[in-house]
Image (cartoon, rainbow, N blue to C red; front, side, top):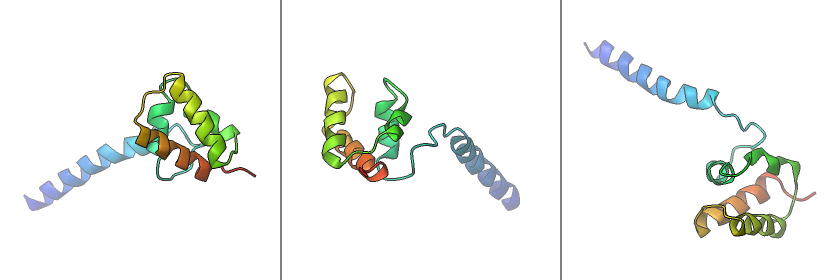
Length: 94
């Protein structure tokens, strides 16, 4: 009986996590703090991977994120700050 419970638990955990890993369609976005919120907020209007084509300093990313916020991106100020920090770390200026 205990073996069945363990197998069931392992199966449920694997079923819950493996599809999420397989479905990560944003391979151009490196792992990092703020990645998930960047995907959530930016994908409201466009593919979040468009940012991978740019390399900016923190001021440049803040200007772009501010523009997106002014154009209707829906997030809290804390989420916008997190996005700016993620982008400046993941795609820094040359």
